[in-house]
Every structure is written in C-alpha cells, then in structure tokens.
Amino acid sequence: MKERTIEVNGVPVVIRPMDKDHVIDFCGPERAKGRSDPAFQQFHRELMERYGNSAIVAWSQGKIVGFVNFSPSNVVTTFPLCPEHVPAEPQIDWPSRPSKTLGVGCVNVDPALGRKGIGHALVEVLIDWATEHGYTSIIADANESAWWKPCRPFWEKLGFHVKSVEKFDKPREDGDTCAYIMEIMLSRTSQQ
Image 1: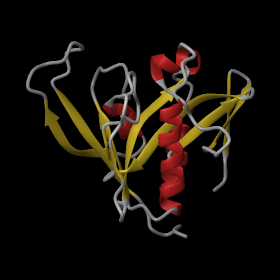
Image 2: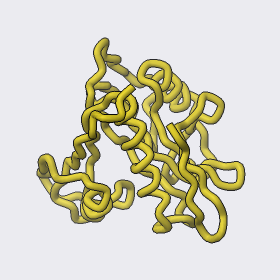
Image 3: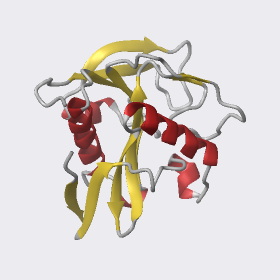
Image 4: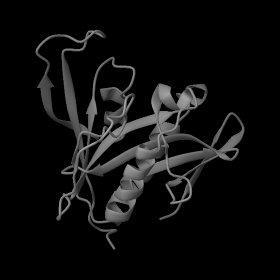
C-alpha cells in the first residue's frame, strides 16, 4: 500500500497505515490534553496483530496529527474505538472469522489542521487499504451535529450512502435525533 502525501499550510502531511512502533494512544479531547492510555494502545496492537491494522494515521513534522481507526464490524467490545473514558477492564469478543465489513471508530484530526483535507485523505487511504486486504465494505456512524463524529455530508463526499437510520429515544444535548449508518461498497479488483 502506498502512502499519500498532501500539503497543508505549506507543510507535508503523510497519510499511511499505522505501524507497530507508533500506535495511537488516545483520541479526541483526551489526546489534546496529552493523555495516554496503555490499555488503548494494547487494544490497537491486538487489532493489528489479528486483522492487519486498526488505524490509518496522518504524520506531520514528526508527530501524528490525525487518524481514522477501525476494526472488523463483528469485533464486539466495551472498549470504545474512540474513548473519552476507558473502562477499567474492557471486555472484547474476538471473532474467529472476522467480518468482511470494516467499522470506523472515529476520524480525528488536530483542530489546528481541520478542514484542510486531512480527514478525506485518511478515509481515502482507508478505502485503498481495506480493498487491498479483501474487505467488501466499510460502515461509519454519522450525525448531523455531534462534534465527535464527522457528519453525513463528509461521508457522502467520499462515496458513502445511508444504509440505515437509527432513531434515538430522545434528542441528545446537541439536538440530534438519529444516527445515520453510512456504507461504501468496495471494488474487489485490488485484493491480495
């Protein structure tokens, strides 16, 4: 799989699959606060070992400035892929036969570099990686206004469509009343 380089504010940003020496350790507001969680790193190491990888990362000036993380959609866990608070003892059900559908945990980009194409480049490289590794589709949750998840238009611009809609029992604090399950079917021509 080839890495991709884009330029943001005159600085190169390299997009590539995560490697074993630089495993993501947290995301969202917790990462911005400099927090790290060894259990989160171990979870991603286990995903890498079992399924080939668990994140596509964006590197700039020697540090990770964004990522999209994922797992086969039938990996069931109380350990969220995009946690703010990690359970003390996460429960994980590792399927013996992983799904051919990848589920996206989150897309996260350094806020200082937001809306510059990094998120799109991360997902485009994920699509390439998933196709090369024999996955048939990718799914992601999308909300209209939640700050922690890319919204529906982000996914639609990348070729995803609404697979289903999950209605909430009551509106959330941000006003959202439902989540859209977005899906893209992958070409099978590049499989290994």
